[in-house]
Image 1 (tube, rainbow, N blue to C red):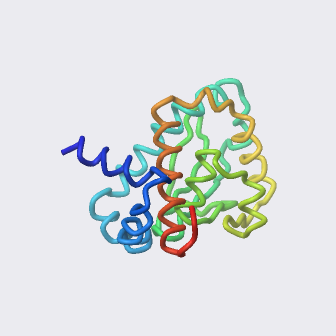
Image 2: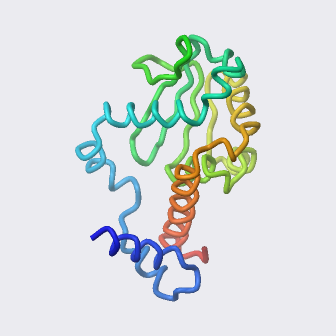
Length: 183
């Protein structure tokens, strides 16, 4: 079963395949996945996965003090088309998700945030295209963005880099197919 899924994903990711855009258009856009996502992936699991990923990726900035500006500050991430929202804060030596109002928020679609996280798109490009919106305390948001841009890509675990890259490429191709554009 897993092999069939991987073969299908590899087929859809190949730009030379002429049927890929037609197949990608059959997939529902992220906003239609919102109700299913809430049932299949409960919020406590989302939090646990996000916190575990952040702990692995940000271990160096947390321990060397680069992330100290986030101490008791609250930064929100809003995935608009999936209806997801996380508010992050640094408490002690742990970056965690809290149920509080953020001081600053970054909002964008799942595709645009995935492109940003995978480094396939530059933050400035996405902000100038209004694909991402920063609200609230812009200094906090820009400081966080600058820290993440300085983070060596090699320090991100290889499996996560691969998943981000493939997921972002797939999401970009699916969006292009829905819009009738070339990917």
